Length: 617
Image (cartoon, rainbow, N blue to C red; front, side, top):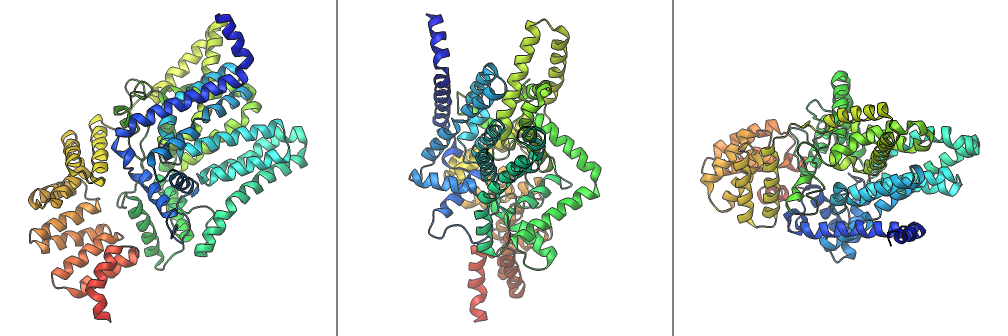
């Protein structure tokens, strides 16, 4: 019977195994999606997911997107907006359609593996892709990560089709996929220039120099044609030539300023929220230029600032590059939106697939094996050249900016193939009794595994747990469930008494309930713990005013203004304080500065109209 099953499987493996793979892949993702429905941030997205939700709502509104160049690459916001509208504005069904799309990724891994490594490696790598926990996690997240991973893998698969069948159409399709991936994450465009190595070493010997050049040009032209509508749209709405988006300059500064740690996406002194950081990045550039700037000019300003930081301390820059490379290899799933490991508390399926401890599983094993697999594959370097070029060029962009778990996701399919290949070779060493090769393999694996499985970020367990509780409390607060929010914020400061934002939010809850005395204590504690938090200054000053200490509150705000000169809300709050103190000229100057920094600040506009518009008329 078992022999008959094997025979039947061999006859039908061209369709049966891919179908089985697709079913398994979708099933585990569906189980995961249903298990995490009790996670508050699933029903009420925060941070980047909230940003994409708000963009989707704006795209689907009558007014549409704001008439300015895209700050971030637009593919995912428009994709999600379409899915969100198509599903009747259901987050659950939107996530469901996204996991359905993500379920096809293992089939692409299978196709690549069959082409490059043989059936054994291909089947194992594809099976691991179906069960790989971070792929499951991001497939159900409202982030570009899943789509970008699929597009990157599809692009490489299409480039290999061009290699085996170098027709013009295949090169054009490769370019179209490159352009589409660039509309998801522009950093993939660095692959374009390095493809000239592949054209010269692999394509030219097959079809000749002239046809190889035509193929390369076709890739570039097709990519530009796909991107062109976005460039035209950016120029049409602003008369500003922005190729895709303009956040690159600021992100380069984030990753290379003198206080950068290689993985955090914030800059000390700049509002960490999306809207706050966006407004201040513009205001800071315009303050230096002393004139309004186009968005491309803002990007150029931050590119210049990043270059200044690098040129002032090239040694530190090189050291930071090395640290980022170590972060890329490190097994910990570095957070950027929320702690990935938080879902373990809500999904039984994920718990055995992703955990920390002696080993940061699974990336702490995947990365060392993939590195060894790349080295072992060099004997057939022409066959794997495209994988090397993709990995190298994409990794370089991470090192130039910053590294986190979701940014390295597009390389997971390639790393899976190389990791399985490494295990396959190790098994061959053992079967053939090649003891020397096996010892070398185990030695380098142990060395790399040690590097991948230690606390490189220096995060304490109490810090991580407190941050998780803070995130949950914030989600409940945005759902207006203040009882649960307070419980989680108290839990956060109970676990880590230095968590300033939890103290700040506790104070806010007290103030909302009219309990100004405990609110004052919480705000004071938050400010003492983190004087770089602008909201702590504002809320503390507000509580002082409620307590009848308006002069003290104004002094707090004046000191905050010196620390945060580009924060529109501080100037707005200071204007209200000056008005209470009977200082109308100072109040007017402050509210005008608030509106200059952020013309879209509706509350500042309301205050200005109430206090000064009648006088001007």
